[in-house]
Length: 228
Image (cartoon, rainbow, N blue to C red; front, top):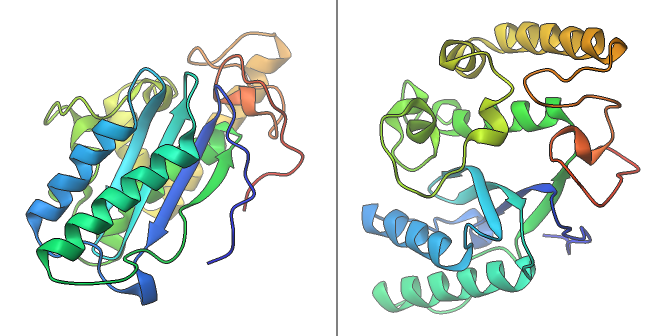
């Protein structure tokens, strides 16, 4: 996996992900998932790193995070990975690397990207045919978004403030790809219409599609190119 060249900056949102070495499993049983979640809480302290969404799959993971305080995110993620690798190797009498290199990170710098990525992360288990619906997968943040549980791990406000209510979020998250695209197009029209009057939509300003401040207030950086 290529080296990461993304600088992590205060008040910006990032998609973090990694997978098993040679695409092999990183989770073997339920306790592995639980332990990884405990490490997330330990190393990604909420006062500095807000976890907006996550999904743990058998051989990879996705984290959607917002940096809210001073933190060396690369070091935190490195320590998390080392701690988890040591525990897995000890438990299953394994040696060597568990992950395929260092974790990867992409900046999320538009509202559309934020919402589409949240949908993509939560849909992973369904796309992999592991479950029939997002809420059936215990190892993602989707149940937190629906209010079915309160883990204290996830901060949903940055995403949910872009929806009128939970029903709209459900339609966007669980509808067909076309339904999700149609809802996104409608939101883009709303953004542009309110932009003409200089007013925010859902508490979120929308100025241009490539400014990180579209999705996180007081962002300190500008992106020259939207992540793919």
